[in-house]
Amino acid sequence: MTEITFDEFKKAEIRIGTILSAEKVPDADKLIKLMINTGDESPRQILSGIAEHYPDTSVLVGKQVPVLANLPTRTIRGIESQGMVLYAVGDGFLTTIEPSREIPPGTNVQ
Image 1 (cartoon, rainbow, N blue to C red):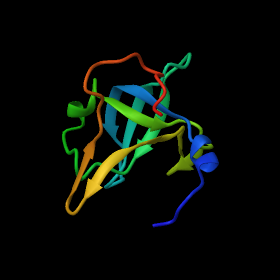
Image 2 (cartoon, rainbow, N blue to C red; image 1 turned 30 degrees about the vertical axis):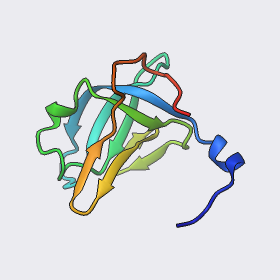
Image 3 (cartoon, rainbow, N blue to C red; image 1 turned 90 degrees about the vertical axis):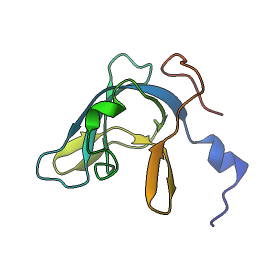
């Protein structure tokens, strides 16, 4: 494990977002395109390599998830990705991390 300083951690802007839509990226085995309300004026488009764990993308719609919001935009397979969704990952599984109750999109995670 690589340690970071508290000041480095404070740079990460993690917000709760609500997944508005989720669809498999054509011709990509692992990618799902998510549209997520993170409290901004318009939803963020985020690509996530989770398709093997969520073959039915509709189960993601409505979930509230933590989003690393201050990553630079990245283009993957010609599609812009505006952040990263955080997941719990273990031996043979990946799952969303969700608040215990519904909270407003854009709420900061500390």
